[in-house]
Length: 104
Image (cartoon, rainbow, N blue to C red; front, side, top):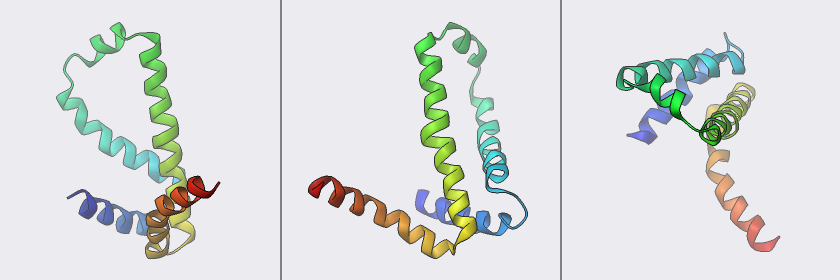
């Protein structure tokens, strides 16, 4: 199901990148995916208030580096090339990383 959802996301995202900038579109998709989860989060404000400083820093780190930067760079790559070509490169990345780490 995840592969199907991701494929549909890439196809629709490519079309929307003609109207929106990569950063703008990433922000819209992020909020569209986040807002429904607030329904399942009673007590969220209490949890945030009682969280440690390290927990807040960890949440910021995860939200900025692996998520936001990755999705924005993906949107930029998708806006510059064909969806099929860019997606193919995504599947080559782990193999290149393994070879790089194995021989480097």
